[in-house]
Length: 482
Image 1 (cartoon, one colour):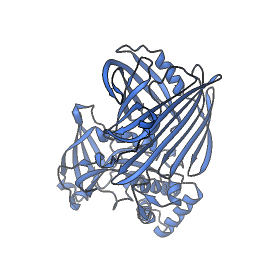
Image 2 (cartoon, helix red, strand yellow; image 1 turned 90 degrees about the vertical axis):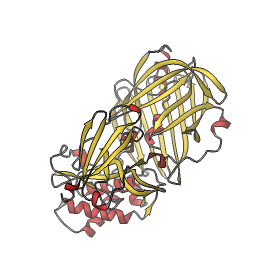
Image 3 (cartoon, helix red, strand yellow; image 1 turned 135 degrees about the vertical axis):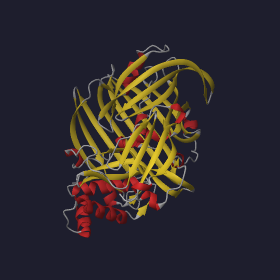
Image 4 (tube, rainbow, N blue to C red; image 1 turned 120 degrees about the horizontal axis):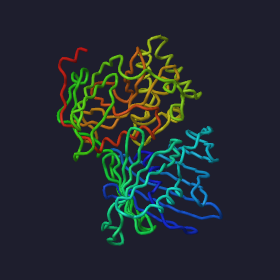
C-alpha cells in the first residue's frame, strides 16, 4: 500500500456536524477482506478545531506481511483557517514525520526521515485547506445531484496542495454493517501531478461519510463505518502484490530482452486513454485509447530534456550529501576504479548496490537512501533509491523510475510483468537506465514515470496498474544487434 494513499485517505470528503468531541471508527477492506482500521476524531477546544485521524493496515506482498500506519493531527480556527499540522507515517521499520506551523502565507515545516530532522520555510499554497476547512466547504455545498465543489487540499507529505473536485451524485441504497441505508453518492477526483486518483463516498444528511471506496493498484479499497469492536477486529490475509502482476501473452527469451520488444497496452473497461512518456530506451505511440511501447536495451541520445540542478541535488529521500551515503559512494568508487566514463561508473555502482543490499526482502516498504546505507535490506525500491543517491553523490544526475519488469516466474506465476523500480542516469549525453535489483536493464522494462525518489511522487503513476491490459508482446528481430 503506497504511503501517499494512506495520507490521502486521511482527508475524508465530509465529516460529522460540529460537536465538542466526536469520534468515528471505520473498518478498512481490500477486495472485501478486512486489512485494517481507521479512526477519526474532531474536537472543538476554545477557538480551535483539532482533527485527529489515524489508519493502521496490514497487507501481504508475495507472502511477506507488512504493517503500514499513518497518524495526522491538524489545528485550525473555527472558520477553517490552517494553524498547524503533524503527520507521521510508517512502513515496517521506516518512519517519516512532518510537523508544520502555518502563519498566514508562510509555513515553517520540520521533517524527520531516518532519525534526522531538517527545517524549511515554504509558501503556503494559495487557498489550501486542512480537514476542518474542507469540512466547512462541504457543508456549504448542497446535497443535490450535479452540485460541484473545487477545493485545494494541503498534503503534508509533499509540502504542497492538490485540487480536489467533488461532485454530488444520486441517492443510493448502500449496504453497511448495520444494514442497508439510503445515502448520497459523492465522487471525488484528486489531481496529482501526472495522475488523477478517484474515490467514491456515500454520506448521510449531515455529510458524515458512511462508506468510501477507491482503486489502489488495481484492487478496491473500502472503508465502512462501524463501531470500535468491528473496526479493530482481527485482520484477514490479503496479498495485494500478487494482484498487481500483469500477465504476458507470451514468454520472452534472453535474446529478446537483449534486443528490443514492442508492447501493446489497452485500457481496461473502456477507461480513459493511456499515456506513458518517451525515454532514452522507450518510444510510445498512441493507438486510439491504447498505446504501443517499443523498448530497446540500448539508449538513444536526444530523447528527453537534459538534467536540471534538482537531478544532481540531495533531497529528503536521496540523501547524497549525508556522511554515511557519501562514505558509501567513496567505497563503491574505490571498487569501481577511477574513470571519467560516467556510464562505467554507473555500471560499477549498479554492481556495488546489488552486492551491498544483502537481505533481499519485500518487507521493508519504502526506505530512504540513508536508511538503506545503515541497514542494507529491501526490494527493488531500496536498490533504486540507494543507486540514485550514490550516483548523485559522485556528481551524476539521476532519477528513480517506476514501471514494470518482466519475470519468467514470480510468486508462483509464470510470464508476468512485476511492478518495479530502477534508475535513469544522465551519461554520455542521454538518460540511460540501470537496474541494481535485477541483472541490469533490458527490453523487459516498461517505464511509467521518473522522479526524485519521493514515494509520494513515485507511487502516483502506479495507478496505471489497475487501468491497463497487455494485449500483445512482439520481439523486434532486427533490433537485437543494436
